[in-house]
Image 1 (tube, one colour):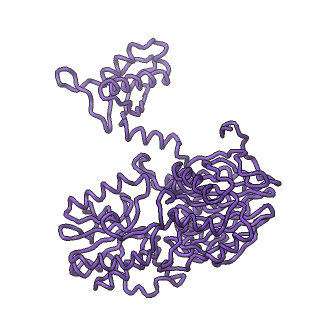
Image 2 (spheres, helix red, strand yellow):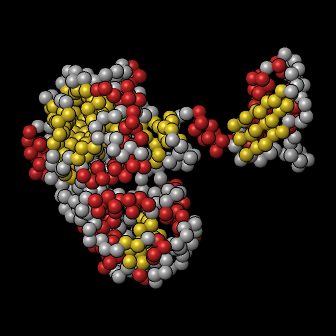
Image 3 (cartoon, rainbow, N blue to C red):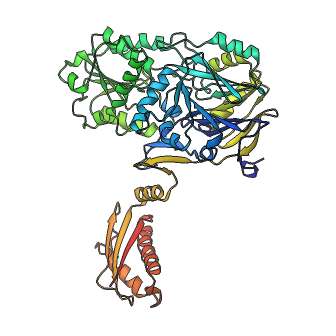
Length: 560
């Protein structure tokens, strides 16, 4: 059955246990998941993704929460698996419309506090801290926080128990024998949960296409010590600010090689502050601001920078294009990209790396040196998890379509009875008759415009995108009340080359507009809307014939 043929979910079912992704399924990022049972809803994670060059002026993208807003009276709470932006970043923006309690680990709570302060919500949101290994009961759901390893401290799988069965929501995870920071993955506890019986596993698919094991952070630390020791000039390393284990490894490797550590980027300082609040990175020593490191010898400094994904406003981009006031990189220097390429960011990352190379900087990625491991499980780890849990059914999430399908096929070979590939907005009945898609919910995407949250398909954003691609034109036209043109119309263009005549002179756009208006029926010239439409067509036709573009055209019509 097609999704379009299914009914809309209007409320939480009473006698069925359902799962609904509103973001993060069929894509990587923007995770927002919902469980429904006995007339109530439980939310797991509330994340963002980031804009790119296809959406001009948009930095943050979030799932549309209209469905949850309509169910605000039936929301039990928001449970956060870990503090990555794609799992927690939307909470501060969307919470005012939902106003339900939040449950998370101490690290995630400290990280969230900084986000809430930025949105002037500190003190408003009821945040309940749950220790790893702890439990909380919300309505018909009992949730256990099971420690797992990931590229951020205090990541958790959730064992969600109901009287219809236990669901394991994996969040982001990997099996790392040397995680460097944080607790080891509690394999014994997961084995015990598997022995109790697991109805369904809602599971991370990010790296399921990769064979073998994702690798250990401890091994990366040892490699970084060696790699950093190979260079004599200035070293910059870009990584995800939230990868606290990598941050710790880089600081350790710098110290081993006699280098001072300078943090460049606001989010790095923010994450360090959060770490100190919960007792992490206590032995990292002195960390310098960029201004403090400016006079250090080249061989004595290592910069850790934000911007590994090519973000235009991040520290590394400003360094590459020469606009950073204190950090300069050039011939004899090296930049290490100790991170992965998130799908969709390839163009911006390669543009950044090329600019660094043009500046004389040696660029090193994980293709050339062992300087990165993923925080997500490869196939060998997925197989080990399913060996512990032995889930009856698997619903892959956190991946694009090819990841989800590969994951589902792989789960069946590991003993799962059912594996269902779904998309955002599809409601899956897990019990008593599942897995099967039984309904849909409205989905969409939102972004921040100043102080407002607006849909990504709003007219203002559509026009902005059109103007970026097709340019724009503004026509000022003065008519009398009888429709006679008073003076030559003024046409101003942006992002367009004005067409030329066969003699090489610019086309008289104002004259074309005047001729078109004067050819209109006298009665039609009395209608402002009709005049504006004729003028728009003239301008768009000229540029479409000459350049294949249809500019966004505004007509300022004045009648005297």
